[in-house]
Image 1 (cartoon, rainbow, N blue to C red):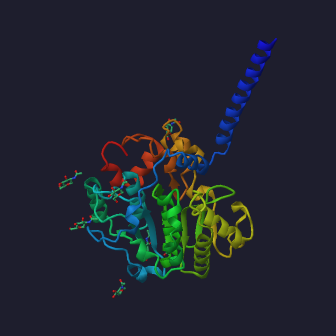
Image 2: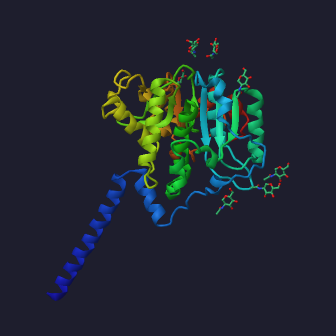
Image 3: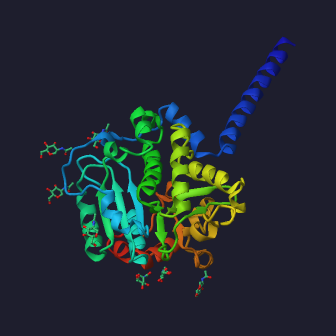
Length: 364
Ligand SMILES: *[C@@H]1O[C@H](CO)[C@@H](O)[C@H](O)[C@H]1NC(C)=O
Ligand SMILES: *[C@@H]1O[C@H](CO)[C@@H](O)[C@H](O)[C@H]1NC(C)=O
Ligand SMILES: *[C@@H]1O[C@H](CO)[C@@H](O)[C@H](O)[C@H]1NC(C)=O
Ligand SMILES: *[C@@H]1O[C@H](CO)[C@@H](O)[C@H](O)[C@H]1NC(C)=O
Ligand SMILES: *[C@@H]1O[C@H](CO)[C@@H](O)[C@H](O)[C@H]1NC(C)=O
Ligand SMILES: *[C@@H]1O[C@H](CO)[C@@H](O)[C@H](O)[C@H]1NC(C)=O
Ligand SMILES: *[C@@H]1O[C@H](CO)[C@@H](O)[C@H](O)[C@H]1NC(C)=O
């Protein structure tokens, strides 16, 4: 009897333990957020925080010129600038730009010959050997690409974020590289106006006449991977709102709070409606929210379609009329493409960043 009871009790304990583990599993999968999983990994020491030693660095070695807002001044009236940021810190090997990142820049330059395409970097001013050759090729073939360096301590001076930056709250971030990119895109468009693009985008059409706009990722969220703020009344108004929201609501422990979060909250206020799908240009006082088909024709959950030869025709048809494609690099970065593969991303790269694609070696 005693033995049976003991076994029964043990069984219950085992079952409880299994149920508990299952629940835990389900919990982590259901809360399918980037944040939760990554935060847990940070807390348990499974990932090394980004090396951001270059952020305070003011040494001026190397050959990359400093970005000055004055160089854009002659053009700011029409806001014909496109900005990309590379916020990694590099060691003695020098700054590395991957072919897919160069592809984003080349495609922007190719499709927008009347715009200035800026890549702004934070790390010390020397390219790695491989990158230098590719960069030289682009700079000699496109007269509208500019690569410049930003010194953070100077860049925040005389802006509404000066005290915020000095407070050091930024350094509490779990994802400083990503959050720095968030902050710089809003600050730069606040300073000079223009269009911001992520480095995992390919531009397929002219963005020249788009000024105050953002791309929606789905019915609920705007995505801060593509947006523009011009020198218009509404552009200035939204730029101020974004900076103010960032200053008040910056959170280092929430991955999406400081990019997509900022623009989505600002739009909810501006357009007096909650869902991005309901945000018409008239409700948004002249600011345009483009549907997912314009900039994100393939949703992130289907990112593999860009690498899928079997579904090629269907995918190419789906992205036929989009202005950009977004490769969801976070998910797709390890997916290999051999140059020449007949997969959508390869076909698009060959067409919109031909120099980069055909000079990157065997693997794109
Ligand atoms: C800058 O150059 C000086 C001398 O050329 C060198 O001593 C120093 O280590 C360099 N600093 C960096 C960050 O490369
Ligand atoms: C702006 O353009 C004028 C003439 O077109 C030129 O003289 C001036 O140096 C330019 N300013 C800057 C900051 O590039
Ligand atoms: C961080 O990057 C710098 C170069 O920017 C390098 O000198 C330093 O060794 C790196 N630190 C670590 C811990 O990797
Ligand atoms: C560039 O600008 C010129 C005149 O300013 C215009 O005629 C031309 O269509 C523009 N090119 C593109 C590709 O937008
Ligand atoms: C880069 O090139 C320089 C000069 O050609 C050479 O001295 C250096 O070893 C190279 N660095 C690497 C990492 O290949
Ligand atoms: C942008 O607008 C200008 C002026 O209306 C026009 O000349 C130009 O062709 C337009 N560019 C594109 C790419 O539509
Ligand atoms: C894709 O379209 C081409 C012609 O446009 C056709 O030859 C090919 O069979 C199609 N592939 C598939 C998988 O449907």
